[in-house]
Image (cartoon, rainbow, N blue to C red):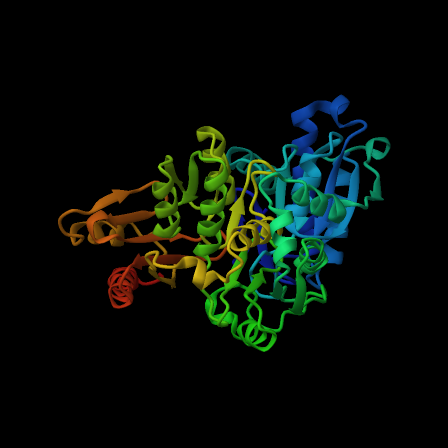
Length: 467
């Protein structure tokens, strides 16, 4: 089946523009491919009495596409249970903890702008499908899956309770210091950007003893700004922190797998500190290996080294981080974009969980993020996007390696990552899995030097053109 730009197909699903490449027809076909994959994987006997959980975020196109993907699953002979609007980690946890669920499908485009939507696929263990399985599902999507006969079609019903289940599981974790947070009782400024996090995070914070002052708490999918929780998009949250005298502000992306922090002065401290704080807190209670991806901050590695535990990096992507965490027996991990993953709950990025862990960390001293940071090294990170060269970026990679100078170390597991250990700086250039672009990310203790690194890489990428 031929599809056109910008339908983005990755290991864990698809993403595109609603009404153009993300349509009910494509959604239904992808649902049928996933259903046929599961049907063939477990056999007809395994499908009987089991089902796929289908949920969505708050985007306005969600109901239409969720109906279409449910129809596709039923057409493949798989039963469906609809879980409604909830964060992605809420849906994934529901799959993991339901022995009758053989998979999950979430209608979401995560942090992408409002005109986008997509599908994320989960296996029965509550994690995104592996890259190998993703390739097999894509092949079924392209060739057209075999559908069930009239007497073998799946059925569809609703399933409630996934939101309460997620909240209760977080509150029941030994690593969440509910007593300390309740004793502190902070005011928390919260921006859910009208996304799915609004149905979980405010209630979780209240049960933790916080007073919530929020914006964007209506889960209607009408994002008032760019929904990615990066510093340039958090001005209104900073104003709310100052107006309410909150010691901390939290920003959640639309499907609630990423959490960004605004400090007690109303200033964003950078997404990577979400994971760094969570790592510091968890390692203080349970030392063990830590895993993050190649684009995450040195601050996370510093936290692991300070605790004297093994530290590992994986290619970018939640599924790849989860695989590495499982391989190494990591006690915590995640991605530096604000995604915290705790095996005690599930090997998925989880913003509600991240909020509980960060609050546990702050509650130990009852202080805001900047005071908690103290004298720790603060890094400057710059992220830039560039058009993806038609012929690939290998020429640019080669040139960057040649010009990198003495002491440089190279990692080719995901694009090109160059590290200068003595200078405590690095740059990573890789193809995005969610947009038709290259991502250029650099970090250094010096802001001017970080800009130089990004400019240096950008010149080589721009010289290739876009074909």
